[in-house]
Picture (cartoon, rainbow, N blue to C red):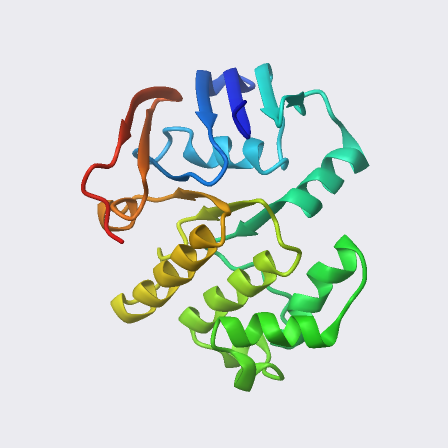
Length: 224
């Protein structure tokens, strides 16, 4: 049984069909890149997989359970307990320091643990920046903080939306190595990206156009 399965998933916003009958099966421990031009449905797909939106047609199965019918608090709990989200725009809380931003994610999941949160920052190379506000961190540091926040509750699935889109080459390499570490730890990694260079790290590449799946291929020349 696949860890995650989209079965004929569609999403319609008024007259716009953002997704049109997309079917994808994701095995536990896979690393998948989702590509396509702007407006292809990549972000909509990520929002549905990340339990931030729901399809208007089809099913989304997580460990065989149809979560496309789940609503409200229960859907939020699935996201908090099983999915780690890394956003291109960071979505950090500006008046909280780096350590507190990580601990907020703990709070919404179960309980805060400062020692554990500090260990997460150390893992991404930010232990010495723990008391700094997001505005005092570089773009690369903010992205690494997002990764620490995503990892703190030990999610099975990591969803990353353009995780290197705002970064220079040096910070891109750091972030990609952190994603590799997550994958080596056994997590399922799904990355939405415009960058062929980022997609080259994935085991499998899925391409969307106009809301439809047009390619699903194994990456035979994967970059380790």
